[in-house]
Image (tube, one colour):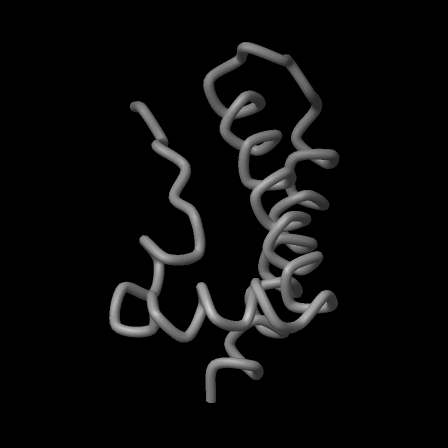
Length: 77
């Protein structure tokens, strides 16, 4: 099964304009989005076995991604 990574604007299309504005005006929010993008791509590579990793590492990455999403959603509310 292919797991296509999505960026933050694709995850929350109803907030696309706000996400763009926050990325431009808030360095912390931009860093959260960059970290989410990096970890999301790493998870995708692991799931597709492009960059093999053990299950524990993959689960840790997923937990990190979820924590980042929680912070990002807090900004969007």
